[in-house]
Length: 245
Image 1 (tube, rainbow, N blue to C red):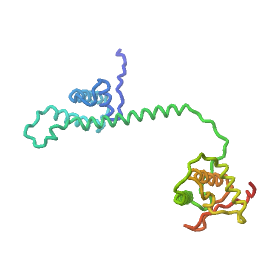
Image 2: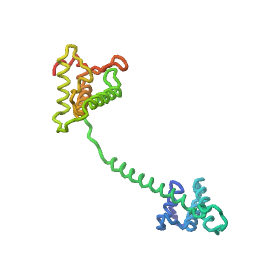
Image 3: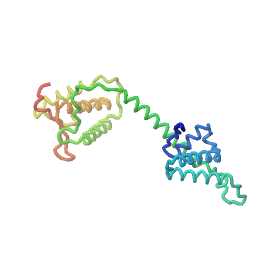
Image 4: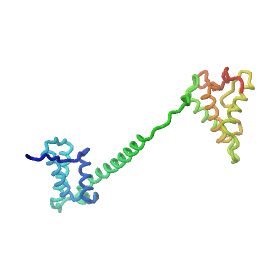
């Protein structure tokens, strides 16, 4: 009775994967490949595939043809009367080496990403009870227009204040939120121009904090930001259900 045995053949993602395996297995210098040896080993693997009735993909056969072509170019004697000296000096293996180096880089990155994916798969995050964040745009105003309006404020302020004193900021987003709400409370229509939210002598840092305060108030639904028509002034309104600070 004949004992059963199993022959294991490595699965390769493509011809470059097989070549890289042979190079690493035989500790070959990838920059100085012995193309004859590598070609013979590569063809041996293809013969093993056929022996075990494994279909050989066309890309593997194409690489075999390429290897044989490179091998023949190296084995053929040099032609002494060739005018193009660059062609004589060109290493037939150069293109193959570049492809192998590029493939190895992608493979290393892929392995790193796989390890990160496995690590993340073992991490479980605690569910949050916080409500979902409500993003802009508020009302009928597109957030891109609001950002452009802020950029215009910065350009206008900085052009008027070419010389500025550098000092430690003593304000916060909460302070600016209170400042804007106070302005709105003091107006009869409970509305101010968007530019009024930024003090005339503001530094760039202070204007950024003020803009963040506007966004935070909109997110908390303390204010509405509206623009009647395109290119018309932008107004900040105090919401009717928030008439007290």
